Image 1 (cartoon, rainbow, N blue to C red):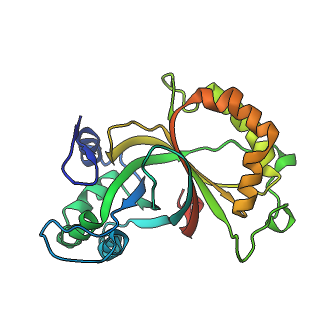
Image 2 (image 1 turned 120 degrees about the vertical axis):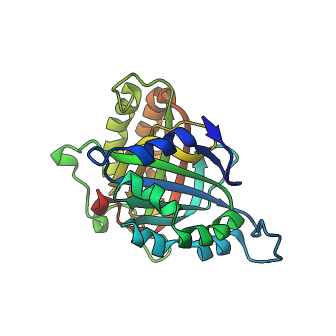
Image 3 (image 1 turned 45 degrees about the vertical axis):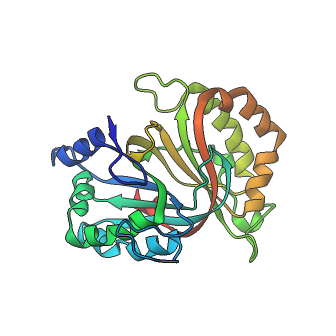
Length: 274
């Protein structure tokens, strides 16, 4: 059941109750993945006149003190360089915040300092998803396919084309109870991994979704972060004929909905946070 309290998205009340009422014995860390779309010009509900951008308003919101107070930390932050797949929403920025417990996420909302700064977020944000996640074990490569050093790959990082993170937000066609990844997608992964390994791919983190506290009513199943030495390296993987065939045969059959974005990271501590 959803309700549209903030202007920038629908709040899933049921997931909110789950976050707030998980028993201490069962509670633990949660990774909140944030997809952000900004207003061109900030729009404050109190009617104040302003010419600052939505992103500038969100920068004023920056709740670092509130996050620190509840033991949370930003483990990923980056600007979207290019969105490859998705609907009409073109996201601007991605962030991942690790909270020490689910309840700590709820506790932060009631802090006076957070509530005071939230007016800037509401002014700046046109749309946002906040997706609660748990770590998912990414498939391990065979020993002979261990990631290459980036100095030895065909498209190493350069001053003009540094490392990028490719983010996938995934909703699957059919998911059987207890199955985290559909068989079609596993078949695609085994082929894509071979191709990607030749270009130095790293896997900072994959996540399974436990709930979307703010969204548009859609359910999501996984969020994946893959790191490449350069955008050119990723595009070489995309264009590989073997991977393209596997995409046609398997990936397209597995995925009902997705956002796929190339992100230029400013903070990347995903692996260390797991």
